[in-house]
Length: 308
Image (cartoon, rainbow, N blue to C red; front, side, top):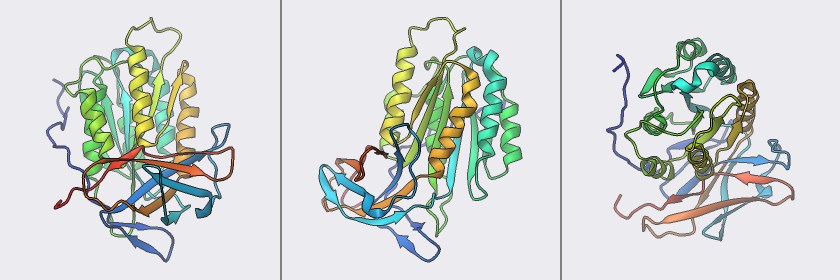
């Protein structure tokens, strides 16, 4: 076992009961209760480019097919808590330098109020750099990664989910929680099961962006279809995006697209018309009234349970 490697897999799954506060503009602070649903919404045009400048009236929100009244709306992107996950398994050896360059460029796009951590994963998941706003420390951690071992993708995602939930919340800011995950293959060594990862994704407000890297030089892998499905499902359930590339040189462009997406997200909140505290899953859909654009957000949430 490599010194300093930690899993952090003993934390129980606990659903966040509610949101504390969100700064929606320079004057207005919205305090949310357990019956308020907050959504981070990305809007893309037909060419997958972010769409800015929309107003509250351009959006329609449905919960279990029931229209909801939007009570909170902000165009300004809220600060981010980012967990940057890098696959450092042996198969990444020839791609590590390019992957490090691309990830470092992505870190430089973070704002002064954003915080990030770096997790690299091979046979184990390593928290290479805890949460910080220091870009130099984050880049240093990225540059120190090297390839070797198997692929503990699920363990890494599990650790990221747990760590993001522990990031301190400020009283006047709703900090978006984001995982950006780069991997070049299927999970081969995790102790965590896929079902555990998906359960956490459904009980969180964490957005997952997945990057699947598969180069022309790689030999065929029977498990790649499974890996592709995992990345795609995580992104779809959480309101993120997934990208598949066959050339590591494309990574810088992909990270740029993710940064642009995050920079143009809208914050939407509504008080659910369903007042039952029954703990059931409620599906959420956001639509854009003008044609030609598509809204993307988390697929739904679990209702609060009476007495909790």
